[in-house]
Length: 120
Image (cartoon, rainbow, N blue to C red; front, side, top):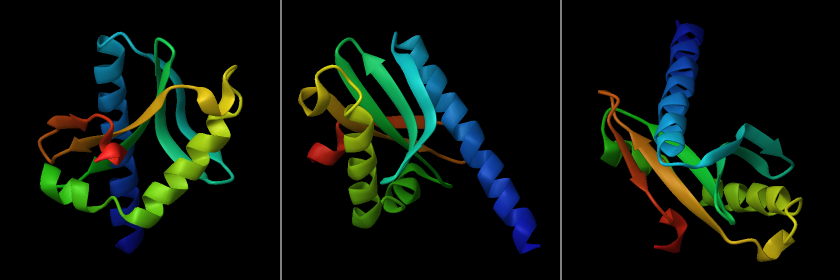
């Protein structure tokens, strides 16, 4: 039973990421990577908006508030480490403009994007 719940949660997470990806595409952003994995960790989506790189963490739960609670300081540190590794391959390296967005997806599939979430 536990394995089934884990599989359902995994597939629901993938579906949420796909929906968030479409929001960014409709907004004119280019998706550079999906589930990008580096030594520092995994980033759900990486997008480009002009010169800026956007690292997107997708969180799905029954409500946006509960989804937001799932992002912990340790995970934020792993995301920053992975982003630093990703950005190293950009022409401007660590000087590349970047931001971290968090996409919250509730049980009804509604999406709330918190742009530049780590700056707050």
